[in-house]
Image 1 (cartoon, rainbow, N blue to C red):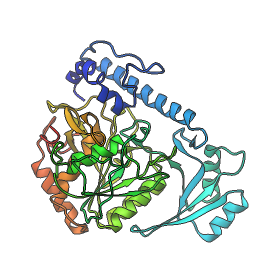
Image 2: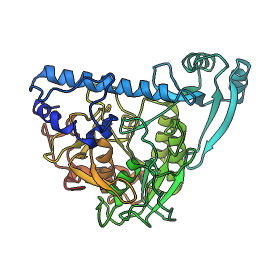
Image 3: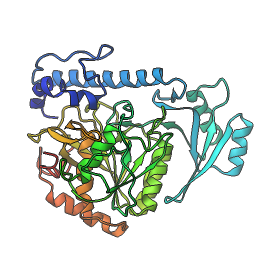
Image 4: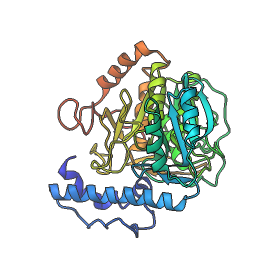
Length: 418
């Protein structure tokens, strides 16, 4: 990140849109756990470190509050990351392994097959009076040949899941589309009406959400909000609905299976969480089917842990820039960064009758995905590399010459959303 980005923090982070993407209250600075930014930060390495500490504190505070407010549905895993309470998910589990787990007190909740990915997984209940973290370690020791994980929760743009919108969910339209999103539900905004088919993968889904609506409109909107592929059709998978533990790894994996089975070639996931074995397996399975996954790097700052699914091999990780093509100072990081796109000074639909300025890497990723889909209209593993190379060829180089860790291969869709 360049030092000259820091003075802009006094204006960019104090906007309502910035607060929304950072998971902070829009009415003012957070009261708990997050230090107030000075009016202007000096252009020094110390200021960058201060910013990193502030964002990391904000991230940990959000996760703590989220777990505390949803204790009946959410618990910490062994790394103190939020996950579905009382549940473990596993792949590569034989019948004998299931019997061994049951004998040790792990009740079998379900055996699940994900259509479209040729993937099976099982769900175990945590033994009574045993924490999720303790049971995770115990089951891994008991079944060393299986992939065991908590059912982690992934957040929209790194913020805690926003409450559902008190507005009408977009009526689902049967469509054959090359574009898909995994997010919250899409509201009935005129810019996307009649071109979105939705499916739910959580209780109460599909339910309209501001985040999902904004992502969809930036991809395919026309009229009041013009998307990067204006007028195209879209399949939207709502993994949140009204569930307290919505956005979990199993829901995202099932959503990927639905999109892959429907022939979607490019999927946007503007969600952020930790490494999860089930999700990694699902991502790899979708890629083998010819699905390209584009994911946001999140908004927890460059000192945050690597974001997933953006960090998985083959996933295109996207960061955001402002109207002057400067990297967003709050942009998170992935193991790799592939492209940049507008993530500030842009407008999108935020409800059935609303349009607003949005900010964050969540809104850069759909622009890259939409542009890529013009080069990759159908699933074909042999066509993935040529399509990505075409996108690379049109990207505008930013930062250091050539590929760099801040902007990747460069800026895509530089005028989109503006």
